[in-house]
Length: 182
Image (cartoon, rainbow, N blue to C red):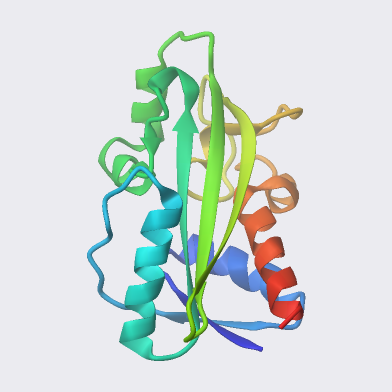
């Protein structure tokens, strides 16, 4: 099945293609201009974006929205993760964390798929912690500072680990199960 993925993020596109194409789907990027809804809810943002993507391309399409929620920063940057990464980067997050002992964090993702009849959502998360320094050269975004629960390497240090445990992987897996049932 050919799937349209409305994203401008090449890292997300690559992960979706690798995972979904291994299950027999073809993933094609579609770009569209849309002013993203501001909300504390990933699902609300993804649903709104899926509606806009459907209107723009008139074909079944999915979108994905993710956020990094850090406990000791009261869930910041949360749904503003992409904007915060652009403004202060991972160095800025490490500065905000300082010497805090509580470094717990969770990555969350929501995929919204508009099939022409309505929007279907799929969510996943990966718990972990923020490292004390950037480590690794792989991945993108917050991967150099996120260590998944039960492990010592950041996602950027082990893409294999990321591909097995990430919030996006779990959500894409649920999405692919839904597609197989259609």
